[in-house]
Image 1 (cartoon, rainbow, N blue to C red):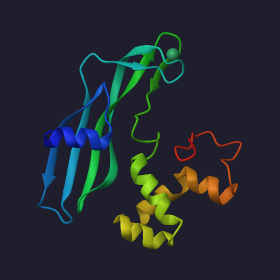
Image 2: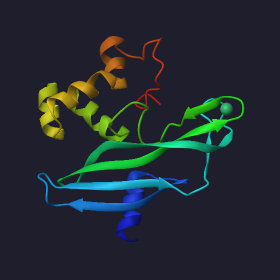
Image 3: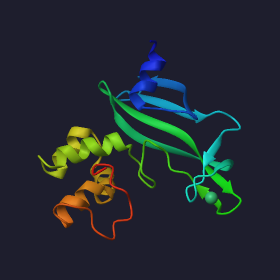
Image 4: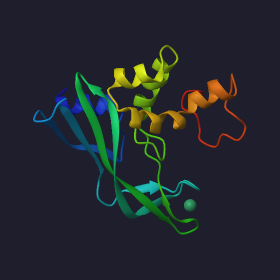
Length: 167
Ligand SMILES: [Zn+2]
């Protein structure tokens, strides 16, 4: 198993997503690893409304903060397609590693959630090495926090975002 295969396994990437490139930048502090995920040209994607395999209409470049790669900050980059479904029109697909609208991967959010149960938010942001502003941005979007702090045991009835921690 080579380094690329280890990264693919670690990210849990599945077709049509593939790891196209990786880059370690040691000129910045802390050092950062950038991973570039793509799909093969001509791939079909499930329409978010009906699941029908549809061609891509266009792509938007997105970046997510991922768990540190050893001591290096790690960022995941991908061109996320919008599908063009004959019935439902143009819709942005969901990627398997992040919730829609989040700037963090699911694994990063999960790490944040397990820490926030044990320590104040400020300490969590220090531990994860994200700025207070980034933490303020991610905190209200964490599903488990809403589940545990607002409803006690379960997601709120009006919770529309599936909670990956209660699956
Ligand atoms: Zn559709």
